[in-house]
Length: 161
Image: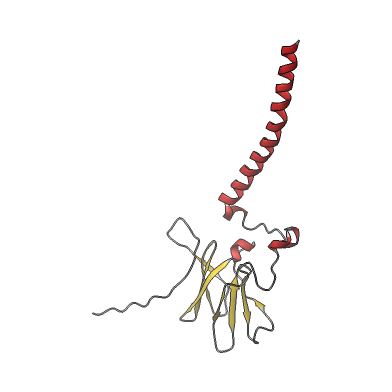
């Protein structure tokens, strides 16, 4: 009789912690799949209103704006985690400059923008893009496995023939 009582207690003590641990293990596995397949899930946006308050942009924090690039005598591009925005009136108004990027905030995480011979190049979380003045952004196919571009720099080459 005492043996059955010990086994019942052991089963209860084993069962409930195992259920709780299994729940967390499944949650970790699911989030790991999402994080490791970022491009697959990149079109899905979660509103920042649904997230905790420390995820809210306030005074351009959280890398909302990383930097800016002057594209002509009157226009400046501001870019960062919120995409690319054009201003031409001393930062009073901003125009969306994200035409051509795929849907989803991961596709609009901009790390660098460079202007070279009237062509803009943008290094993003998910690849390298180019845009001629007056057109939309186009993705440049790279011959590497990892598309993430952390920075861009111009290099001039001189040939001495």
